[in-house]
Length: 191
Ligand code: ADP
Image (cartoon, rainbow, N blue to C red):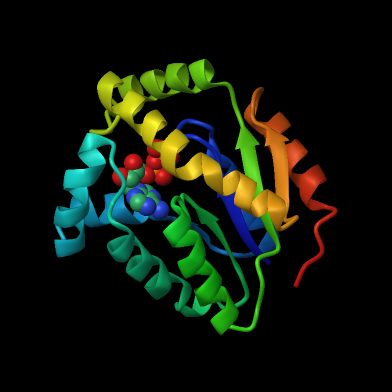
């Protein structure tokens, strides 16, 4: 199973990604989490990525692509994976296509978690108070939404044209959303 979960910042992708990955016995690969782990360990990748993340900008494709390529080469991802937070740009879509094609597999589905813009900004501001993430200040949250609309939203159409897009309503309780996702994925054939 090779899946992508997409949605604007604050859509609750990370939470849902963990449930889906566990269900299918595949790793959930979150580029945001990998970047944050590198930042807290002070690796060269982390130092480089932090500049962009703190401003709400995307880390350059070249850096992100290389990181994902290395991660999906790990043994635990051979049977499949769920990507959370990647791809986020058209260039990343192409790069991922190449990586998957190289292994002789295909992308099974792209889950798009659909949420209301005002609702997600509200959620992110709440999370900011609880977790204190450096990219959770109001200005940065707004910038992240803008960048998402400009660079990532267009990907939904791209995957829609390939007929692998599965849209799920992301509003409501976490387990309601999880149930919707599983119902929607039931109809997706595994490769
Ligand atoms: P969000 O909660 O906004 O969805 P993530 O936790 O997925 O954010 O990612 C946090 C930050 O990490 C992003 O704002 C961006 O700077 C960087 N990042 C994560 N994934 C990517 C990617 N695919 N391309 C470029 N930058 C990324």
